Image 1 (tube, rainbow, N blue to C red):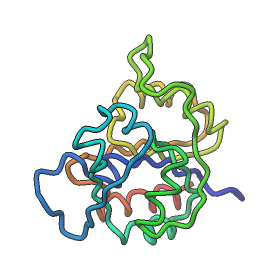
Image 2 (spheres, helix red, strand yellow):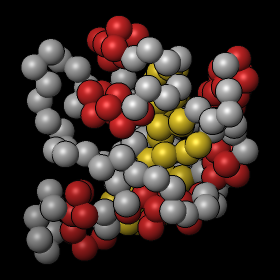
Image 3 (spheres, rainbow, N blue to C red):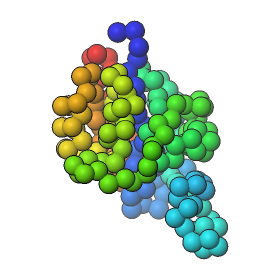
Length: 177
């Protein structure tokens, strides 16, 4: 195979373990960002609107992701702002390709995660690994039935984010192709 597989990467959950119960996560730095999607859902002038969204990011993740045998792509509601805000904070080269969602949080008639159908169209038959905290069994089944190339759906717990075993899984899967 001459092309590397795609790594379709979500921010919140895998890179930003937003559900962590710890006030300080070991190895993570706290950032305050004003992503437009989040900002549009805040009350103008509110404390949250002024302070920004608290995001936990591990500065070592950029180098670890860049070292994987994949073509990295943002698959996140942050869209192009992931290149502007997240990539520099973790040391990823920018710009990475971005999946642009036609509608954020759209209801799917079959109960799939709202990203699934568009993500599959975007992959256009290429092998891919999808790293997200919201992947369901329905998404896994749908992709297995509707995508002829190999795929790995790696659900990340939003309390912990990407961890060493996840990087090992991604590396082994890519090398198995």
